[in-house]
Amino acid sequence: MRIVTWNVNGLRSLDKNGLWDAFFELAPDVIFLQEIKAEENQLSDSMKKPAGYVAAFNSCRVRKGYSGVALYSTVAPDSIETDVLPEELNTEGRLIQATFGDVVTIGIYFPNSGRGPERLDYKLRFCDALLEHMEKLRKSGKSVVFCGDINIAHHEIDVARPDEWQGVAGFLPEEREWLDQIEQMGYVDAFRHFYPTKAGAYTYWDNWRGMRERNVGWRLDTFFVSPDLVPKLKKCEIAPEVFGSDHCPVVLDIDL
Image (cartoon, rainbow, N blue to C red; front, side, top):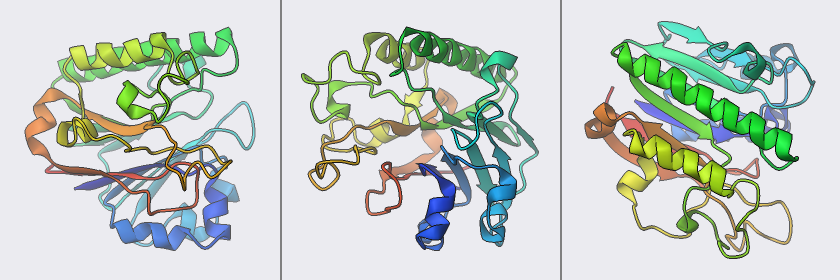
């Protein structure tokens, strides 16, 4: 199975710019999109239900044109859920979950912590609630894949300017410590599983001063898998050749 995650920074713009069809050259079986910034009724027919795919959406309920996630799958999931966290953490359209047999896949647009202390608190509560949810899934016998725009660069190797960006939102000690906790509990960053020391591997670049052209970026988007799925990992690659957003897709091949 090939799973692709991508923060599209506005799904409708991909259609408008003629980049939607080109994205499918990655041949994904399952697609998780973040920051779609749209409701389902605002999308074209080709985006609401691409040929051969089941589609589902979770849009922000409290602010139009903000956040939102989507799922597309060539295989109909056993179930699709969006309200799996406490209610106050469900309103911004940040999560969509699809279950395939004993494997639960979760696409997530993590909150940004850059708008003051209250948003950092919100993000950390979101992270803790997510971990609690995933641990319940594991205790029930499920395997877990979660992916998306984590909005956290874990290690210094994951940012182009680690000395300069210390203390910047997305690289805060509290955020990075949560990813430390995730790994201590056995979850594996699929990209680092294959490329433990690869530098310059980024998935996000600011839209100014040629940051993408100069590869001055952050690795904010990735896949994590529960430890029982590690033997099933085949490949995890970043796809910077795919344009249309300030993020690029990440592709996971896994034997499910």
